[in-house]
Length: 381
Image (cartoon, rainbow, N blue to C red):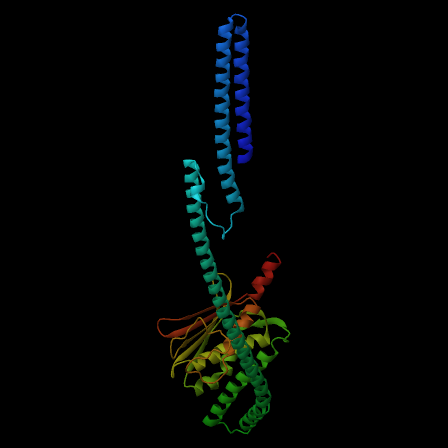
């Protein structure tokens, strides 16, 4: 679109063109009639021509003046809008002689005032936002620093605990071996008694803790050596092994598993899984209660190792497998037994189910693959 000055020049050019055409046309008419008129008529005609020319020139000058005025006011508005900045004064409405342009100038001034107000509000909002972001950034930085410090403290505590466990293994090994050797000697010499049973039960508890700690320290370097194991026979032997421990805690333990069931598993890992479940049941059973150990196959062909005990209280089953978790009435241990069970189960694809039952019992179940069924199915049988 052309700017106002160009429009003014165009309008002025058109005006002059119209005047010129009109003047030429008038002269043509007058000249055509010149031959017919008498001398007095010619004089009158020339007077009319002069009058017509004066009218045309007057109209042209007036129109040119008007167009120039419009052009000037349009130019003033255009230059103002083009070069306007925040510090520039508003348009002077009194400088505009045409009512429409005066109204436009007032509207522009109102618009600029509103724009300045909006800019001020946006600036304040931006400053407040920047301040809020700065404050929140400082708060987050402080929280991150606190979290980092807490993480370092936790890592330090865990490192100290791991070091304590390592040191404990070395300290426990020798006296434990001496105790077990003396128990065997006393049994060989016929010195069997109720006190010896309690000593043996205590030594088995310490042995279980020692083996947990040993596996816990060496598990990252542990090499899995799987073999075919008779799980039914194995569980029966472990129940017999913990007989003194169960009797010493004034508990009863039964085993149910008539069918011979086989799995492909590492012996050391299986010992840790079974022993820690039995030991956990002994620690958290009511005095005089019963622990039931069983093994069977389910409808899907899985071999299920199940252990149920009458609990002292209802445990939080969501965290029982957490590392270092210990119940409020724990009887010995460092709280790593069930966490090892969970790690071994996950590593070997063993399914885990557990629940605190409504009758006060706690139920743990582990689903193993049947070795022979799995072997036959893998060969297309």
